[in-house]
Length: 292
Image 1: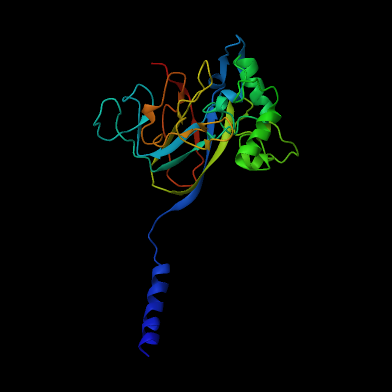
Image 2 (image 1 turned 60 degrees about the vertical axis):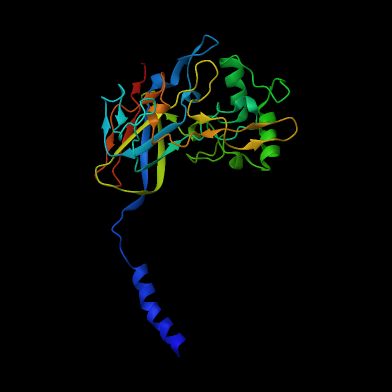
């Protein structure tokens, strides 16, 4: 008797808790990112000037209370107290994400040099480093890799996967639904003005009226193509056969302390884009090249 009475009393309480409205606005927010053509143009180590989507590194973006231009000499979110002059203050983001992932690239040579959404296939990686950087990809025995299929099959073997959609370094879905897998299915696509545009989603973001979208692009290194935002001491551990290396992953505090990682030739948004409503159509423009 006592047991059934307890259950009867608990039922209304449970229903009341499920129906409580906390007043939070949490939505999947869609944004657009524009990278100027100049940011994807460079004289490569082979002496050739190229404009190529592969020069667009990972783009990190977040929502901040404010963006200023008087802290570091370029647009940057406001920061909290500075306890160490070598570190800078925390920017306290409300949330954020990236467009282009630093993932395990299956060969030690490629650690911190490859970002997803920039290559149609693995042959483009072989071409990029061998022809434009004049630094051919090599395997664990320092043998030159001449075909993309070798990288692909190495990924299959190391990761125990069977498809490009599980590796997620190259194009694996027909985003524009034209029946082909090509450059139009990459993260960034050239627009009519010659610049590069992309669409990105921030999943389940809590909306705060007036917060500002800001971000930056980590440009690949001039000589090696390495990304400064990549931590080569973390990520997938490859210890098979004669391999012993980590696959690399993004540093963990990129949105909190952007200034730690922003370097010359990186591109930042000179100003934040303010939101009044969660579904505002906002375009983040990375319009300023850092040169200090």
